[in-house]
Length: 347
Ligand code: FCA
Image (tube, rainbow, N blue to C red; front, side, top):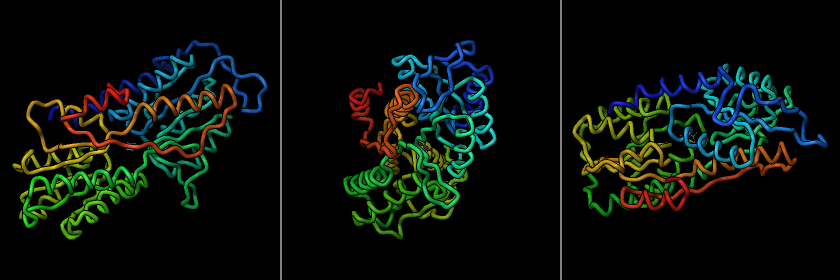
């Protein structure tokens, strides 16, 4: 219980401090200035420097992305500047600062997908290349923007979550009249909506009645936001004795599981299935199981390493990255998480 509300401030403070001093794990503020030429430049820049901006620096997923981006920086020998940019103003200031440090581009998970046009305008004004990760830019017309993107196969992953919940419901032979599913949603964000809609489609596809699936929107996409949203569902449905839980990520499930535990539910009466693999790890490592039953493991290695690698090659070698890359997920539980994470290069 102790860390999930307050830890964010500390990590954000560290990220902000690193940003303000222009330092990063791989970069140095005194490193020689690199040239800032575009792809048509005959000479590759002497030293490549890229930024990696994330919307929620306190979230383990994003810390893992940074970790694997640092691996790419070490392997290819470029400077990496890690920046926690939690709102539009911080993103735009960060791009100016990166430009002042002669960075030639950045990878970004934007705090708001509608910032896409403003981000691209600023990047273009500074001749910087942009690679978007996790959350895809949306243009003024409401359509996705034509900017290189790597995201998860959100619908498919949501369906895996829904199937896992349905299977576990059947395996435990829970009485339907005592059971409901709680879906903690964030429909403003496409990748989030596709995940929870995928879960609902798979649950109903497996025969779970749609009128026993209760959704509640989170105000913020973190454990606290989910805790509050789940509280509303629980208050509205005191008759439910057993809960299936899904959301857009591990944090969304974790908050709901904590809210349920606060009302006396436990591993025997909750089946929570997340999406991620970072935040849930502490749950799987507990000696006593919690209601956090499984997660769909996604790859911060691919999202951190490959995005920075592709951006580096774009800047250094003029190799244009693919426009749209979707990564897959694998369901893990406390029984097999170590083995699968090791196989996936995540241990
Ligand atoms: C979004 C979510 C993150 C992570 C990522 C792949 O950005 O906010 O938690 O799931 O997609």
